[in-house]
Amino acid sequence: MTPAVAALGFLPTDSFNVVVIGAVFVLISLGLYFTFGLLDVVNLAHGGLILIGAYTALQMEAWTGSVLFGMGAAAITAGLVGVAMERGILRFLYERPLDSLLATFGLAVIIRQVVQLLYSANPRTVPDPIGGSFSFLELNIPWWRLMIVIITALFVVAVLILMERTRFGLRARATVRNPHLAETQGVNIGWYRAAMFAIGASLSGIAGAVLAPINTLNPQFGLLFLVNSFLVVILGGKRSLRGIVVAGLVLGGSLGVLQFIISTVIAQIVVLVLAIAAVRLRPVVERQVGEWRQRRAAAEAA
Image (cartoon, rainbow, N blue to C red; front, side, top):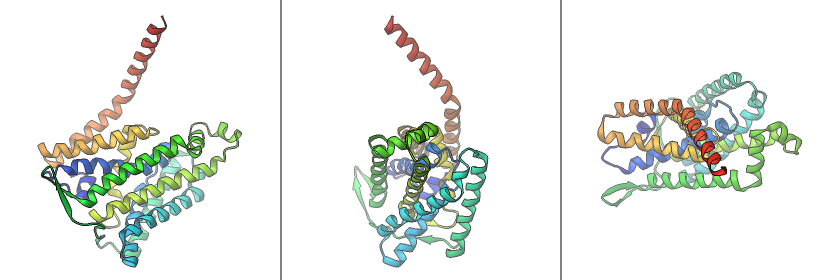
């Protein structure tokens, strides 16, 4: 069973979970889109930020009795941790990818150990904020899993608007594509890098909080989603949010559909092999498409 599927408790008899799994793959990848996709930091602490979000929701539920308050607190807490990581360590390592990889690995270990120290390794649960389910087209759809799909869609739209329709997005993209030129135009690239890392960390925290009610929490919780989120970002294209959304839906949905036909373990292997093959063949396909477009443009010009 794949980590995401294991975390969701996927049941082949409930086909709505195919949609939910696809949404989860997208949701856990949104934060990594900023930290890895845009900033080129191989952020192995991504799972730790998801873990922070989940345990923040747990703690806020214990204090206030509301998981929904915990989701807002998760975004703030994970965002602050992300800023501290970027300003304290990672801003010195943007030109040193191996060092940044080792640094984020160390940070991930620290986060897990701190969580274990504060909460122990015992499994914890977060109550479902809504509870119950409804029937639609003979499907039993839990309300909170429907909310996961809706929340994912809302955040995808919000990120698209932020990056493509705002001044912040314009300057952030300039910072990513040509930081030296952006700096000569008066863009504070250090501030924009910190802001992008904070947004990515906040999205990771929100993902952890949203997924906490349908999971059993422990200090290894974030690791469940780390590999799948990297796979989605790499397959979809590091700097293509639309590509990441498509890759997440295809990988997650394929995984769910295959489990109707074959065993969970074989489904995991098939999806992993297909994803690796797609990553390997993508440059070849892109080159062929580029050549075809050039030939078509030349023919139209003639």
